[in-house]
Structure formats: structure tokens, C-alpha cells
Length: 199
Image (cartoon, rainbow, N blue to C red):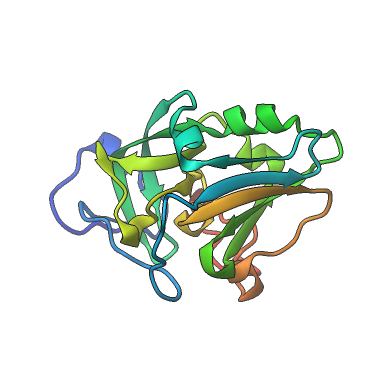
């Protein structure tokens, strides 16, 4: 059963908090390792692997892509949930369509600064609410929250929304990411409380 901290919530909002989670108005900062520094003059983003047209784009080219906004809730494996967050960025379909994903692609690996990775089935990545986002609640992401770019996968625990993302690799076979190798559940569905392996 969900448990709540902070202000009272309406029944509608309580129903949006998955089992075992608590509500917070704050956005806690959690990550492994240090916060990387970024030089946008040399930054790039790549898509490669099981695609017809692998590509790399600069920050200026990324910022010129069509924009999309997503209003959503986010849920962390450490049990906090934050509701009604507005993210803005580029729809994942924009980059997948540009890369022309091959039929053989079944999984995606998000590659980030400092060697961090996380993985998911392609159908999880290719969802309508998945973004490559650079703003939250109308403000540029802070370095602690993934500046300049993070992946947003709202239907999964938030470690799948990888910070400091630099590329996406499409593959035929699943490959466990950083936290998945350390025992976190590979599916990470908050509504099923899939926090750790075996759950």
C-alpha cells in the first residue's frame, strides 16, 4: 500500500502513486559517481547499432529538432514519487525514425557519461511519453538532474531515465545496464514493485 508524506492529497492523486511509494514535492538528487562537466562545443549525441542510418548530432543540431512536452509523474526505486512534472525535449520517435531502426532491433541501451548504461526493450523506449529531455518545469535541467540531456521513461522506475545521456544503441539481445547488473530488476515497473531481481 502506498504511504504519503507531506501535504494531503486528493483521492485522484493518491491513485497515481504506485504501491510502496510516498509523495514528495521535492525532486531528490540520486546518482552513482560524480556529476560530469559538459562542454556543449564538443558534446554530441549518437544513435547506432541495429539501424539503417546511424548518426551523430551536435548540441545545436539537437536543439533544432522538433520539440515535445510531456506532463507526467515520476517514481524512484528509493520510494519517492513526484506528481505533475512538465518535461520538454525531443520525442524519442524523432531520433528512432531518423536512424531507421531495423526489424532485428529488439532492445535499447542508453549510453551516458562516465560509462553508465541502462537497458530496456525497444517497445518500452518507443512509447509516446518517452523523451530526450533538456528542461523540467520550464527550467533547464540542472547538472545534478542530468544537464544537458537525460532520457525520460515515465512508466519505469526513474533509474531507467538515464542522466547525462550521450547515445542510444539498438541491439538484438538484451544487455544488462549498470544498476541491472547490481541486482536491480530488469523490467522496473513501479506498479508491480519491480525494484530488485526476483521481485
